[in-house]
Length: 324
Length: 301
Image 1: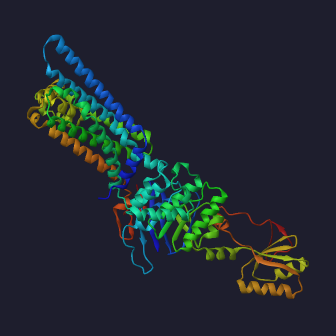
Image 2: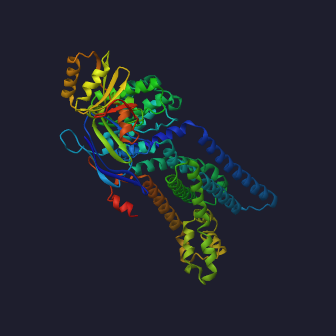
Image 3: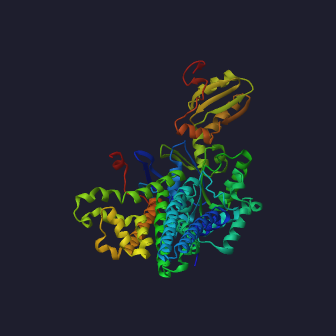
């Protein structure tokens, strides 16, 4: 487990990280999300030991709770937002150079290098100079390099930036595979839709503080619970409005054609009860579902860029339809 | 013994290009030309005047050593000034710092590779340097002292280059800084003493006199002129600057070389300090601990 305790970091008088605390469980694929300048890269660099926090601790523990032995750097593989490659080395030389930096030499280094190059599908480029690789290949090489010492934790800072959709997809597949192998992966990205597809956990950072952190499914559920329910009807709109007005959990209503969007404060059992009452009153209900939340919507809400959602609204207790 | 990975990589990369080979050839050709032309001039004068002036050969030997040293002076800072700043601009320094390599071993690897190159250059120049010694005049000991002084000066200059590179992100800026530092070292150790000398009756009382011990050109002048006149020539250099060597004359060369070694070591350690992420200082097993600076103390600045 990787635990950050009350990390604070200043650049001059600018506070980059403000009492940041978070826990990342073993095997998690943790998406680190935040706007530009939120402190993501600073936090990741502190985790890697490249930067020293002004205060606070970073603790790495195994599953039994004991501190990991050895230098913390030997447990972490780091892929920065830039590739960090030597253009004047061959691909195999680059891998073996970093292997030797971790004290792995000779046949072991060569074997490990070949295995990883094969994993990132660069086996056929082993004797190419790094300079001759495409951007996507360099990114995959950088990932293979970060894995050369078989770290428990992999930290990726904006790994998909500047890659084309196909390369991003391939890269995502590799990340998922690594996660399945049991590696703890911390990944920061601006492409939130991709993160929401692969991450098990998510942390949202804004202005140096963690505004939300937890299992992605829990975060999604929490946000989804705040989202409106959309009721699609074949007919009987006015009857449905009358019935919904009588429901105390319905806080507001928005009508769009034969669809009614309601802000409903009840839990899932009360939702089921409402659906039952609508059907038993003879209404032809074509659809009844809560609008799903996305990582983008959570991100926008939590980082203070809320979207305008309602065009027409009906407040509980009022008569007729109002324009917002 | 396990070779430093950075040294291994640098040697591999440098061995691929023709740049260093070209540099070695140019330096040696220049020295050979100077040596042969100078020797021919002396020999032709001997034939003309029917007088053997073997001492003139020693002056040619001194001139060749000075030329060689000036080349070391010019080349060395550029060999290392871009090494750390280059890693920074490639964003590979951070990656190296996340490995098991310590900042000291990174600097050592960089310095060792540049030192190997300079060492090869110096050793390759021995035949050219010793052309004027065909008539004798200086023994192997003098050649060895000269080589040692070259190597010590190269170590100091390379360390200075690395130190300059550890400050700057851009290679151009770090190279400019390295040469700026060299200029300060050459001129800055002479000017204060020259300015203050008139105010001291005995120049040895002038504390700025000792600054010359840090001047690599003056040190090399002492080494180069030693076979010609012992410490007399460097003594006269001092006198021209308004100084007196006094009791230092007998130990001047070893003392000055020791100072250069110390300066080299200090530059190297400062470079290590510059690239050390402070987090590494407090790393222990499975834990990185931050400093004691609190938000309140920062805001109260």
